[in-house]
Image (cartoon, rainbow, N blue to C red; front, side, top):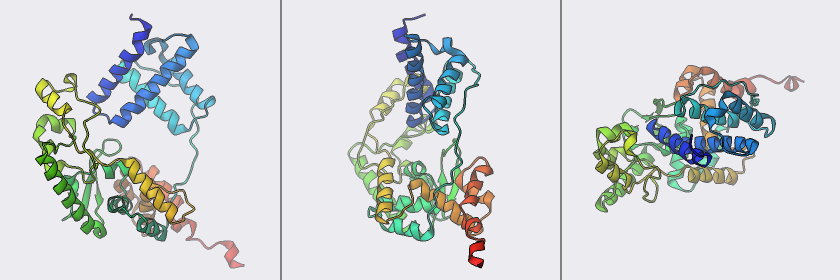
Length: 346
């Protein structure tokens, strides 16, 4: 058994290594590390020293999760995220099973915010930046999530078939969504801008883009191909903040060094798109608390109101269970305003 001071850094390093071997996103990695560190600090404060999680087991896990629900009064989603991180630590990193018997935070049943067609039009008209406006139009016109729009690749746009393929969406699932005819012209223009920028990057010795691990192993040269470029690229080049390592599936050290040092054109930052939409909502003087995700809610609700089958909407949204999609029946005008109020009969 090593010194307690070595537990946390060594353990966190191992957690990061496993997330990368499993090809988890950097956002998931950072969230998991945050909760695991907080879990360790919670028990350090109780015991006065670092305790390895193997020694804490199910009791330690349940104490921490109960504390989040009872003392901190966190939201159910927050507690679930902490639970996912800790289960990952025990099952995937430490290869140890734990039993969850903690007090669970209650998840309030809230209806999603939905904009009317006119409100959506007013918001879109008040986004001056052409790129942000196009992304907002795609989110409302196809139901894709914000990060799905940010991560969209050139190869996944099928203009001829009026379709967009969402790769590796939530739950690591692919799905096809409609390409709105209204944005085809703007999208073709955007692809032209991306192609010109990519050509300049290539001339400067860059032109690389992040590739999924499987593709990186099969064809490393694809990282400089136009079809793999992001439709909405970052305005600046960067180096991957999470370099690939030899124990993550690549045995050629020269290849590893080359990949880790590549100047890449990553996708646009989601926060900038979110800010642009929120400014537009404010400029449109809406009283609703709307965001990028509200455009996705509005997409589903408006489809439902025009008679689209709930199962079709489920497929377009990428929901695993139709019960998740059913929430839109509660905010649809078909149910809310499709009935004559008794007051109007007086």
